[in-house]
Image (cartoon, rainbow over all chains, first blue to last red; front, side):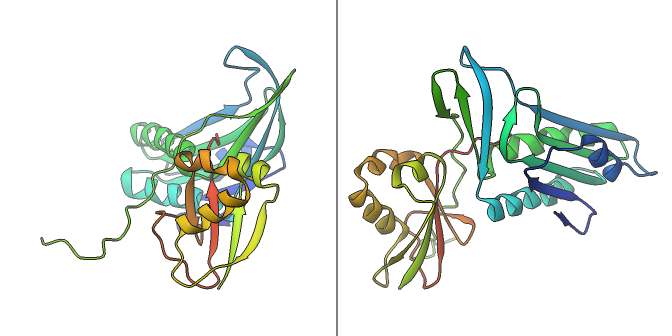
Length: 158
Length: 81
């Protein structure tokens, strides 16, 4: 758990996520909107019935990447504060795996920032999901995070 | 030169270990490190194009030259959320 300069709340853990606490955390008197995203465990994947999921993470890096996402939201959108919680370990159908709450004086920024946060999280945060079916388990298809280009040996002419 | 290497997800299952410590020649790159594990575990090689690496918890290109004490991780496509 960590608090940033913006009073953001970023967590990664095995305990169930408490959305109400995250919403209360970001909702201040000067806010006119709180937009939330509740990512929950679906009971099917690619046409097969899912029994449960297991999440694992490169925990220290994942937390840092989640903090970077929150920090970037403050530079991209006119928002107040951000809460992002992601859960690890075994999750049952219907449970919340990720919850994001963004507060802002006006709704447009809150909607856009919340969407940006989940889209970026799914592409850049080192967390992996294993799907368990009746007849086996597979690691979910994922996205390969963008990697910075190699530093050129010779500085190109400008 | 001692390097700490971490594997996650499918890659951890293939290598059979989440974490290993290896001795490398100075000047070795992240690509050299992956090749070394691919020699030990040939199944890894076919995942090369769908793996990214990190150095000290930042995504890093394959050509990155390793420094003593680095923590390198090999990461399959991420699927959080």
